Length: 159
Image 1 (spheres, rainbow, N blue to C red):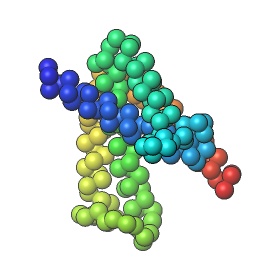
Image 2: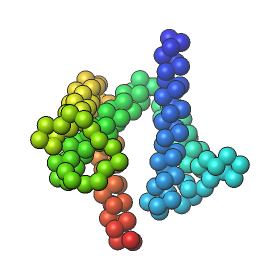
Image 3: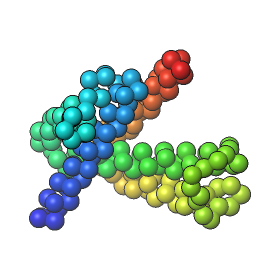
């Protein structure tokens, strides 16, 4: 039980920190309200985004079913990593000669095997989730995908 509590606490802190920085970056690009881009003068951290993400996390935790919240979070992470690996595969196939800051070893005909393994692994993990968590995770990923499409279009129009 103690290890589970520490692992959960560590995951929550990680998600708050990364969520705040992601929100900060999007706000700095004007894809989210600009207030989320406010940075602490003494620490240099995005304090408003951290506060908002922390409050949202507390609201989710207050639903009473922390197991469900954890499963939805896990599904979202699995789905996101599956999309990242699928994107790597698509970009390696569609733009094989593009300049990249890193290389992925073990490719067959331009398909990176590590990305394929990551895609399959994350999809398999997502398939073993509880049905309600799976559906909620799909809704969240769908909302994120739609928001991303609008954000990309907005950036192109304002550039």
